[in-house]
Image (cartoon, rainbow, N blue to C red; front, side, top):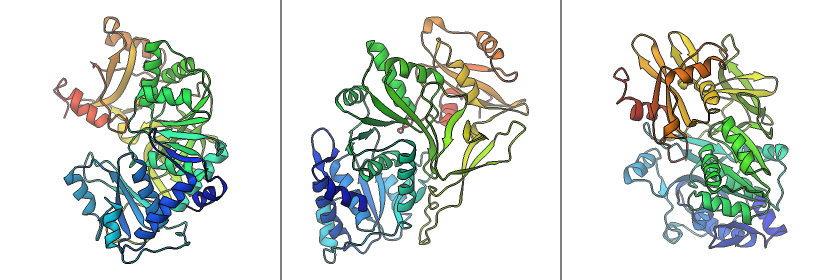
Length: 465
């Protein structure tokens, strides 16, 4: 928030946030944030839930909570009553910020202060989606995010003349991160109500020095749109991709239809923030997720004979632990277990997928990403997810859920395995093929292999649990 104050002084008339209908300069942002922070500081509750629905007014609420030294809890404004109650139950005396005027009536006395929170204090508590159980809160400090911002600046120079945009609900950690980093560097944040390829293409054409924070499914949708329209975007812009590793086919097509794009791929998590970044323009080496982020140390836990083991992260960017009701102690987690498999090759980190996704076929361990990387090079394959199918004899068999590019040009299981036999690093084969019209994705654009197994495979293979 000190940085936003500085931009208010040095660049007051530059647009801070714009959503197509409304825009706010840094001067206006400072005034509105400070006015609300004065009110919020008079509220006795430390933890305040902030509904987020991609509206400028609610972004200002979030910033005001941070400025008032409160612990913001960003939540989806469309959360169900039960979902909201599940989160409320995890706090002793929570307050939901629905209307600043209602809050004003509860404030003791409007309070004005030039003091700032300590860098080690909590900035916010984010919550996972809770699709497989109770939502889990993760705690992040001011310092961990500022370290992330400065690390990004070391790898990709940031200028106040740039603009940035993100597609996704503003309660997601990636969306909030993009907002805060953009404002930290005095740039213009472009707010979107929802993702659409038309909106993305229009922004690329209309905005100079634009950086788009996207997940791979959005990049795939962009390419499909351009391919269908036989259109090439010649504009210079940047994409920062995170959430899942981009496959080779998507990269090739992106450069074909966006020849002047600068593509950066971040690997990380809500708990560890950024871990590594792929800066190679073109096709990086197999499994590479780039160079380690500044200040990050990697430990490979229990590596196998190939050097692949679970990725553990020591980093000043790490979160401050999961939320536990009544716990006040704040300390950065020294070492984060990612649940991902990988290995180090010098200063380059290689990623082999989720530890839980590793397939144990008759005692042999196989990584789905290796199958997917090879099979996506086939013109007949539009999308693919490889997963383990529970089996009484082998423990697991290997299944491939495939979206064919053309239903008239499908490949047989034998053809698939003949193709793989010449390319895999060791003998391996697909046991089952499941042809689908589309692969279902979660609200954040990611694919859940566990959900896919239950929804698409259970009905077709009797041995599946």
